[in-house]
Length: 265
Image 1: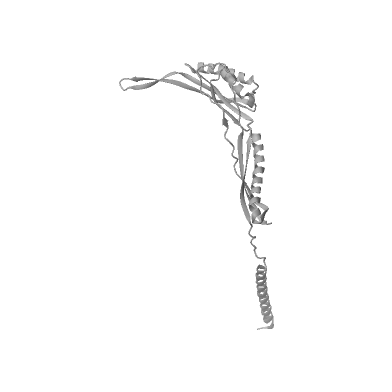
Image 2: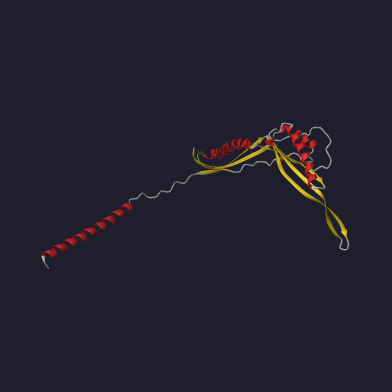
C-alpha cells in the first residue's frame, strides 16, 4: 500500500468517526431536551355549589287578539259569497269606525263548502243519498290591537253589523313587553340564586368567590287567556248593553341554574 492510499483511508476514517460522534451528540441532546420539558400540572380541584334561582312577575297584557267571522248559506255559491261579502264589509266598517286601523285587521281564513242533506232510505236496500242543497261561505277576521279598552265595543259592533261567529278573544303580552319582562326576570332569578347560596354557605364558613356557569331555563309564559266564545248564530243578535271584557294579569316565571365557586371566609 502506498503512502497516498494510506492517507486517503485515514481521512475517510476520521470523517466516519466524526459523523458518528455528531449523531450520538444530537441524540443525547434530544434526550436531554425531552427530559427538561416542563411536567404537566393538573388544575387544582375547584369547590363549587349549584343553586337554582327563580323569579315570578305578574304582568298585565297589552295586546288582544279577536277572531270572529261571518257565515252565510245560499243555494248557489255566488249568492252565498255575495251575502257574505256584504256582511263582512259591514263588519269591517263598524270595527274601523271605532278607531281600529287596516294594519290591525286581517283575514284569518276564507272557505266555501257544499252543503248536503241526507235523504232516504230508499228501497230495496235502505240506502241513503246525499242531496246538494246549497253552499256555505265562511270568512274569518282577525283583529290584533293594543287598544284593550275597545274589546267589548269591537264585539258589539261586529255582531251588530253582521258577524255571527266569535271564535275567541285572547289577551297576551306584546313581543316588546315580553322581552322587557324576561330581561327583568333574569336579573331577579340570578339574585335569588346568589341569596340562596350565601344563606347556605354562611353556617359552613364558606363564601362565594366566583361564578363558574350560568344556565338559563325556558321562560314559563302563560297561554293566551281566552275570554270569550260564541258559536255561529242563524238570527241577528238584538241590540244589548255593551259587552264587558276585562283582561287579567298573567304570571311569568323564569328559572336559572348558577354554579358558584366557593372558598373559606
